[in-house]
Image 1: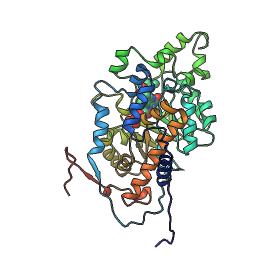
Image 2 (image 1 turned 90 degrees about the vertical axis):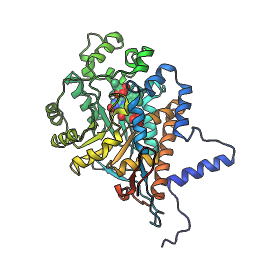
Image 3 (image 1 turned 60 degrees about the horizontal axis):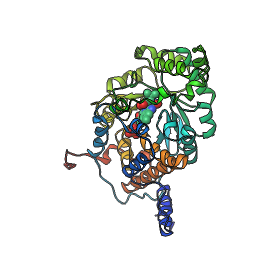
Image 4 (image 1 turned 180 degrees about the vertical axis):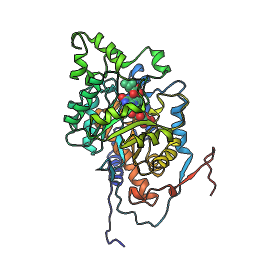
Length: 401
Ligand SMILES: Cc1cc2nc3c(=O)[nH]c(=O)nc-3n(C[C@H](O)[C@H](O)[C@H](O)COP(=O)(O)O)c2cc1C
Ligand SMILES: CC(C)CC(=O)C(=O)O
């Protein structure tokens, strides 16, 4: 038995900080409840930016399904497991990270906060959690890398129609210290998005979120005039080339030959695709439906996770996003086969309200919730989180034991 009389952890430290502030009459800067945080973010954003951030494809059915899927799994905690010292570290693509959580790639953050991706990089640096930076970042990937310092970062690639631009993006990512290329597969075209269509709004068409393209030498070479002199031409060129619906599995070899960095495919939902990814010698996959933003009526990402994880076994690493809001959601995703999860909209809610501090506070709260829930279920490390922890619930949330 341990002879220590007190224990501490990121979760307890955060609780104590919040309760001590409360004693002095100081409320947390952000709502702790992710649903209330979302509503608070809505108050500070204009209708068009809000519609873009919060919206999904079509009816929003898949966004709702993402959340509902978490409720169909219940945790069965174990007692007296000696959980005083908890270790949240995990190995991803050969590196150790502080906890199985990352900032998901979200484009055009200039519509959420003027400091955009630079603020998110600062938040990632403060918390020592990895950032996955979008190709459609409002700021150049080099500026974001400088803001993050030596923290872990991956670069998300929109593999477009101009091979020179794709190669240039990958070279720049290598040169500025990004340690993996995440290729997003589920956005071959932009989906039918009711709210953006009703608002007649796409941030890119107003020049938002193109800083990383506008700073790219190959992108600039493809234009007759520099984007500063003729933004309209640059924007239209971006819209025509940013993605490439003609790509097939055979094209992956081109990318594999282009870089020695690990490659992770984002947007996998089908076990056959997962197997193809393993055959294609990529290093990982992200089970994701893009936060319900692409295929209206697509299956919940969490429903896809266990089948996909089983299909690839230990051949490649499996990550997860779409609908993560709470520590228990992360535990469920880990138990169903994910090595780590990506968090999307919630950190943007924090960013909208309080910039870098808001994004880091939201992620710290989630990290704290994860730490405490891990211990409360009887686990001391991420390796302890196995499928035995979960039971499948029926539609009413009941469980047959
Ligand atoms: C406003 C917005 C922009 C996004 N931009 C990108 C992007 O540029 N590249 C990408 O791979 N995924 C993008 N995504 C998808 C996220 O990376 C992630 O898959 C999704 O947000 C996860 O779901 P969640 O928001 O429910 O956590 C975007 C999502 C949102 C909400
Ligand atoms: C289309 C991209 C540039 C941004 C994105 O992934 C999204 O809006 O979901």
